[in-house]
Length: 121
Image 1 (cartoon, rainbow, N blue to C red):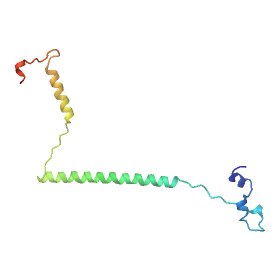
Image 2 (cartoon, rainbow, N blue to C red; image 1 turned 135 degrees about the horizontal axis):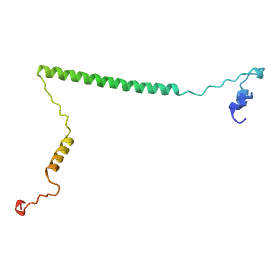
Image 3 (cartoon, rainbow, N blue to C red; image 1 turned 60 degrees about the vertical axis):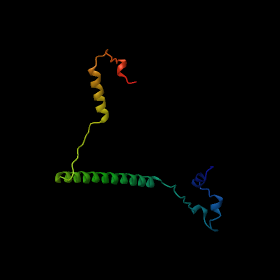
Image 4 (cartoon, rainbow, N blue to C red; image 1 turned 90 degrees about the vertical axis):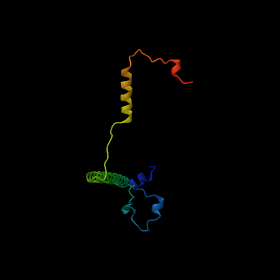
C-alpha cells in the first residue's frame, strides 16, 4: 500500500488526518470522504457550443447581408438607377482559348522567318 488512496480503501488513517480526529472518537465509525477529481467535459462542451453558435450567427449574418444586397441591386436596377453586368469568363480561360486558336492556325512544321530588313536598327 504505497498510495494514500490505497491506504484509505484499506481502512488506514494517515497521520495528518488522525491528528484532526477529536479524542474519544471511535475510529471504526470514522468515514473519510475524498473530493472527486475535476471533470473537464462540461467546460469543453460549453466551449465547443459557444464556438459553433458564433459560427452559425456569422453565417446567418452573411446570408442576410447577401439577400439584402441582392434585393437592393434588383430594386435599383428595376427603377433605372443602377445597371450591372456579370462577366463570368475567366481571363485565364480566354488566354488559353486564344493560344489554342493560334496554335491551330499554323502548320506544325512551318516557321516564320523574318528578313533582316524587317528589324529596326
